[in-house]
Image (cartoon, rainbow, N blue to C red; front, side):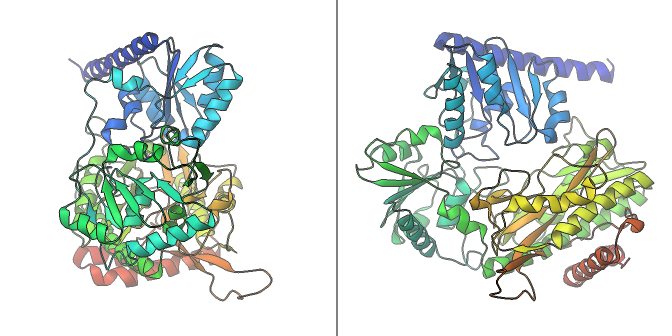
Length: 614
């Protein structure tokens, strides 16, 4: 049997299974008298990375990307995904009968218009209200009502069609302790209650897992790559209730929580607790961070105030102690990368067979040897040549490239340390980079430098900064399809809000404030050829030398936190201005000074070579 026939047979088997699953869903729809099912990529906490139990969209479609929305009707099926996933989705959906609908951004709601157009008047669309965000549900219901379509959220069609659905994760919860957790949970709760009082709220309900982990100084491993655990929380003016599965917290930690005014309740009891709120209560919920199903449990006698979770704003602004911990974590992360890259380049010179999987294995091993390391912060992206043109590509044992010949190797990786979360992308030339590669690389680098060096008034809405990084590419008629920067947690989720340096619709919660950690990651992708993305994490700090108290207000700038050489072999120096080259040389001098004490031998020699001034 030829390799091609083996691949085809594997695809036929996989797609046949997908078709069978879709037919089971359609049988359930018919049984329920429902025309269509909406399957979002979410869980009861609206998480980005999902426990197995809520990976329904992947189970039903075969599409493994981290974002996307699936719609199944009695006769059609469509997956809605943005440009980061188009190539991947086309390959994974092939033969499944599912149409790929290309949308401009992950936040686009094209599936709503599709449903309103495809579902006949008088029919019903089903969605599991326990995993649909309140704000999204409000928009969906309004659009369907205008089309004469009913929305039902009280049935879980997936549960009927998925006989071996995974159970809830059972990993233990542990304390994030001093010195890494510098603010006591009692102080955080006091700060939260002050914000509740400002809203006139007697109660506040929180479902987002990173908010809960941050608020209570707890961590877990229920969600891959994110040190969080499944829980809800209900806080009033004197007591906090943490809804978590029994047995996940050791008795000693439960006693410490009780002493701090935090009682434990069963994870499954959260909806009933909402339903039991006394009449006259004022409940604060975040419509972007709580599900429709939970909101519906609140009775009419409770007044609901919709506003951003105060903890989301608070945790985005790292304290001075947290920033210091993150700098130390970045040093350990940078040292691990020096060790990896030095050995990797030597293996290339020795002619050792290397693949994209080799990168993941060896880079992860280098990080794991560093103090404070807990795990990866997201799946490592190692894309060589054409694979690098897929922003969220991931090599697998069944599909990966060998690293050989001439091309660009894109490596986007990060780790969780007790003192911080890292996320960094570098691109390295394999063989000899061509003139067009160098031009593309340098234009992306100019975007990274432009935003890294920017100064802006405090309170500037983060999306307004997006064009700064795109300008060098726009000037050449080029662009990229993803955002330029996302917030990053403190030993928490690698993607956090509220700030988003992107083409997102700005709102007041996205204001840039001191202490925010954000990525800077412009890119450029040539499908079938190469991909380029150069990413650092930066910390918003008061601008040096800015006039305090002037009529123009306070200004901020970025301190670059990530510590790893930016490859200079792929730079077309004729495209860099003197000030840009000076910034890059100064950055490399900082990288060399801070990492040199942490490495030796081949890693130190590599560091010195790669940080040589232009």
